[in-house]
Image (cartoon, rainbow, N blue to C red; front, side, top):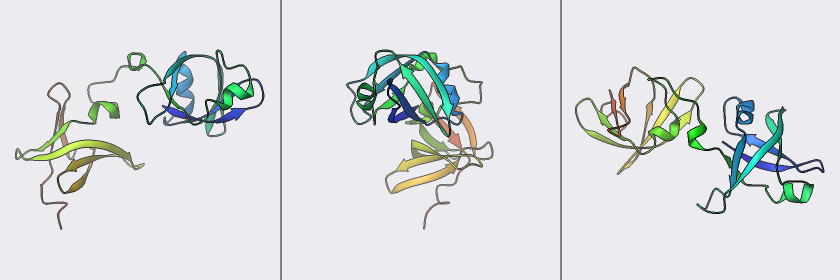
Length: 166
C-alpha cells in the first residue's frame, strides 16, 4: 500500500509514499503492517494514531514510535494492511492481487500465459501476461477481457495468439 520514505520532525512521525490512487485512503485503516519487502518475515503491526495528506504523500504517527530515531528505523519499510479490511468489490471490479497468477486463455481455447502483473497507463489497466517466450500486454478492457473467473483461476480474452509475435 506504500513505503516509509523518511522520518518527519522529531516526535516520531513518518513520511509515507502511498501506492494508492487516492493517498488519503491509507488513513482509513486503523492498523498498518510495516516490514521489509524483500523478505517474508520481520513484519510488525502498528496502530495508526494520527495522519494527514502532505503534498503528494502522507504523514503518520504510529503507536510505539515516539521519536525521530524510532521513525528513522522504519525508513524503507513497506506498508501493508490486512486483506480482510479491504472494502468489497462489485462483480466487475478486481484488486490487482486477485488477478496475478490467473491463467489467461483466448476464446479459441489457447493458453496465452499467466498474469504476472498489471500496468496502470492512465487510459486503462494492462495485463502483463507471462509466457515461455516473454510477455504479452493485453488491455484490461471489456473489448478484450470477456470473463474473469476467480474461482476457476482463469481469464478469458479475445486475443489472437499471433497478435504480439514478430
